[in-house]
Length: 355
Length: 220
Image 1 (cartoon, rainbow over the protein chains, first blue to last red):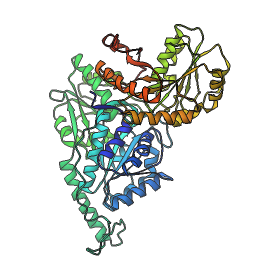
Image 2: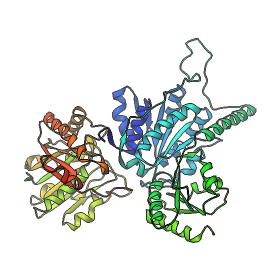
Image 3: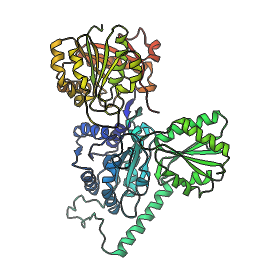
Image 4: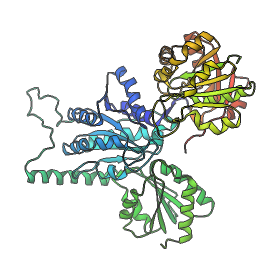
């Protein structure tokens, strides 16, 4: 075990970003993700990188825009209210087709909310977060090890598809400590012939921009972008299935809710209920296929969320509402416990899928 | 060995100061009448001494903590009963200091009185499995920063090296050499090596000054 280190989820994200070759970090402190900035502040100067505490979240996201334009791996991180401030920048990044990594360690909302964990920015993340037609690749880690691995994956996907990747974690994932193996493989950044790195009088100017005054042209940008999104949907969807082979009841959850739910599924099995779980790892693209398949077999779906029910809408879409989908939730910074999820599973089993 | 009135636990962020502090207070209470534990953490709003309030209260230990500790009010507040720690000479006090130099800054208010009284231990809690303190130079750097910010010289090292719930006896044995090297380089004694109580049978007799710990509650 000695090749592992004991890390907070936030620290794992920061270290993995450095391993991925990110040498530019811009942020503004907010609980519960401040360890990311603190870690970068300690480490970046020692490895020739840039750590900059910006004057605001808005400044930080626009610094990300600048570095991404120059073709370098770059990240910023924040928590819910801070990510809302970054919304405009996220839209501009999408409009200019710039790759970057954004981390949201969610806390309870709306408004300033509280500092306890939440998953109530699901809509914001999976629907883009700002104005206009676009998506981000949204990755939902459920362990400190995954915080590290998905950070690297996020940089790689961002570069491949010229998109923003978002790590959508929550306060628990950010604060919890677990051993992490850091011998992680990284695909180096691909050539970026579009980047503004200086023409050296050898080529035409590259222009990074999100302004299009000709509607026909802007329409084409949108159609082309969605062709690219289709490829992401086909090739990059990630999920974990747990005991789904013979499941009658399908629990679905991501992040910390999935860890709680797994305990409940195990306990339900001990009590003779055939429960299973689908854990989406990419929230966009949403893993439609396993849900569509399960919809022909299971009696009922239960969406376990730290929100008032957001992912549940994607579950209903993915299952074409073939079976009932019920919500098992806590909100405002509270976490469902395994007993609550177990009660929901037992109720579903008793109900037999008739609602 | 534990003959001082005040025990301060400082060190790098996430090294396990709070866990050690709670266990130390419980151990001291077995020998002494009047024991208090003070939460001076101005860095981290989570994983606070206050999380163990029920256990501490059941053991008859006074908890001195800001009323905002462990709440949603995320501000660096110090408890108003702070001066009891230096004024009440009948009190045995365990002081849980916040992480890194930023945390140690909170000691500025009480450091002069503690220095004058000369009846304290200022122990640096270290964990070689934490990412920013894997070796002697990096650990020493943090300890020097903590010492400078706190305005109070360190008097010993607590080796709290662990990998959380999956820690093996081998992990702890492998950390002793590191802890001894840190202590030697810092010119300080290695006051104790901690281990979760479940590991005690495998380690007893193999480690000097072994201090068994029970863990504070952890998230799911």
